[in-house]
Image (cartoon, rainbow, N blue to C red; front, side, top):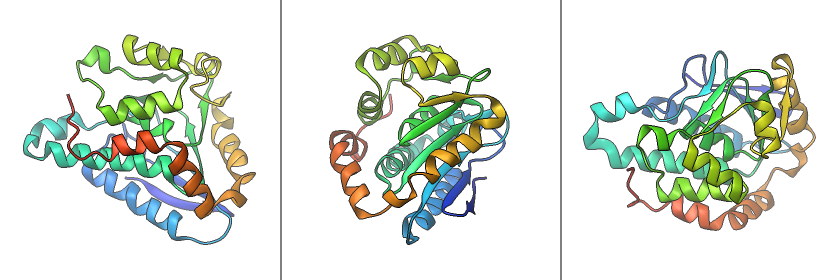
Length: 223
């Protein structure tokens, strides 16, 4: 389960050491961590890390198929997590040490910056291959954070971007050796802790207003 720690002025949210899929309990734990970061005072930033092969493998489809009656509430909770990260009033950096797929890739895009391992691991939106269309909110988020050409390729071809390719396509901001992923993310976040506060939150909310509106549309279906 996700665990929040703090290193000086930088909060470290470890998403876990498994596939880190969006199980309802996992979403609740991330939300609780974001509550703590948001309610804190003074200079601060957030780095989201993970341990193991995956940063996040996206939606918990096994849970979703077993709880079809909760489909709508589940989608709303996923959308709200993406919207909350996108508009969080602190600088956020995703430290992508492993595979980052589907809704996990979308969560990474909701961060202000991304640092990815250069030599192994993929960033991918596989929806075209797994026959699950993007919701309007998901589409809006992706298109708000990627260039039109990269968004089109990522969304329609399910291309797997390695670290160097992801950097060249501006999917990520840094591509570094495995051992440097977390430290680079913390360094980037540390330099921007003074930006935290209501003004930053307002800037993000206005910058991404269309995407946030689409994500918070409670009637948008999945599929």
